[in-house]
Image (tube, rainbow, N blue to C red):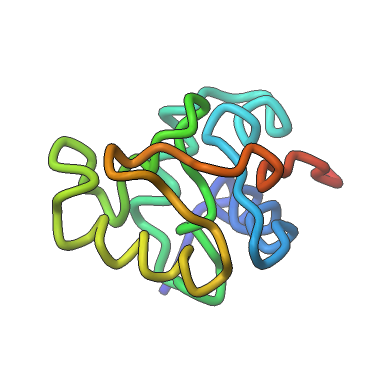
Length: 112
């Protein structure tokens, strides 16, 4: 599947996020000098998941956020349940309201 140059840049940074850690749309956007919405658009269309781990990107507030384009129903939507499962397998946990429990899981040490 063909991806844009921007998507390639986003996916390259995503691959830097270690297992068991999360980043935010905002942190990715700052590293790329773009907007969090642009990052979200690239993640929504990630054809390489889970090898390119878009599930490791959450809202800057610590909210689990969307997954595969679904945000409105998060964390109750099926896609968000999948995101929560993937993250839990990596040791990243959220409370019943979809908020990150351990702030020590944040990561933003991108090499651009």
